[in-house]
Image (cartoon, rainbow, N blue to C red; front, side, top):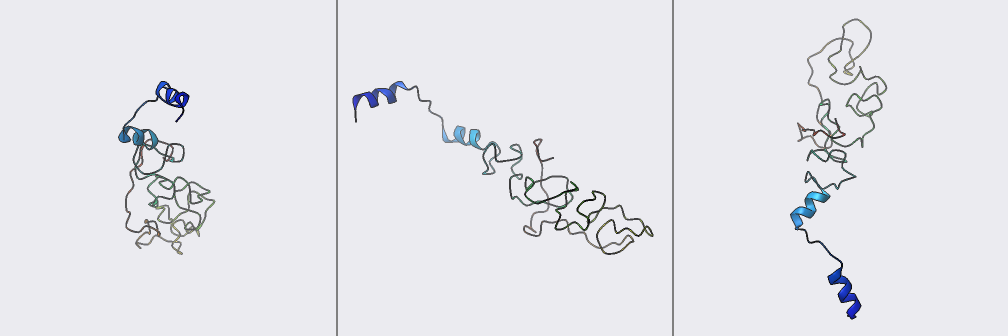
Length: 135
């Protein structure tokens, strides 16, 4: 090694940080997604392609599924993807108005179970959003 390289390395003022300090700077909430790629750095369960529980108001997958009307139901699961008042389990069903507001195929309120889980991650039932961009 050349002497000028050794002198440059010792004189560069390198700062030592622990792995924990580095990890906290790189990924504050510990979900494996770095700053700049994670849409909510305060919530461990919110990151790109995360399980997204339907109808909870938390965009836990960082918008990876298209939701044109913003009703927290992805377009491929929403029977009316451009109307935010019509989505599965909406609770807005009125008998006799000829509008299927809850996407169950009937223009009347029924007590059928609502599919609120993400079909790709059926075991995930709740997600806690942080205070970042996901809410």
